[in-house]
Image 1: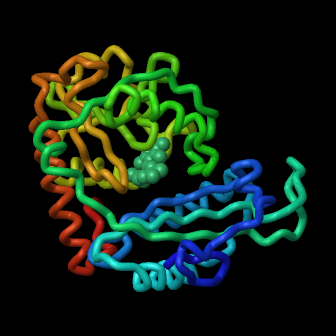
Image 2 (image 1 turned 180 degrees about the horizontal axis):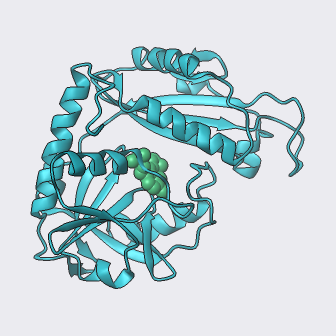
Length: 289
Ligand code: PDD
């Protein structure tokens, strides 16, 4: 059952007019929120990021956080599975085609939920492969915009060679993946690129850094040179749907010894433990003060 503009219905019955600005211009923003044991994970943070994206495209938030919570609770209840991922999408509504914002048009709000599957044992044991590419996206990558054409084209470069992800480089520095954030490990130090307009501030990225801080895992947030990615001991990928994954092959060359490393193992275990805490209901638990 999906949610469309105030109503719940089977997805087959959901339609939007062809003049929706999401369809015509890609004029909208979205969120992907993981749900564990029927509880949305880090919901406050996802709603804050949604607000940031809406502000970025100058679209008024149609709901208060309390209203979002209620709607999302109904979406979760109306769908099967303890673990789900919610896709939430807001566009600037339906109007005659004109680049300028339409006046007094209600936004289109669409929400669906799908089962959240854990990464396969095989992937966690052996790691995944990635390729690198030039980050040719716009310069507001901090806005989670539905217009994902550059991300799609970049991701397809990986798919074309049976790799999982494309790691993006802008002006010689690591930004992120086409649909994930990227960390590297070098000299027993976890390195993360700093948040900026050139990457999406990942919710999983934040959790990983909080786990590192709370568990005395050496880490540093700083610009990462492309050359450093190529000599990294480990590369880690994070996202709401993939959690934490090891990248063990980059542009067809092994990363470190070609196997998932110690930092991955430790952070993956801590992440699973943290999820369990969340599932027990301590949704407001924070790892750092
Ligand atoms: N994408 N960077 C980009 C470009 C992303 O699209 C995503 C997530 C992330 C990771 O953010 P988070 O940890 O909050 O999921 C980083 C989602 C999952 C998607 O588009 O399906």
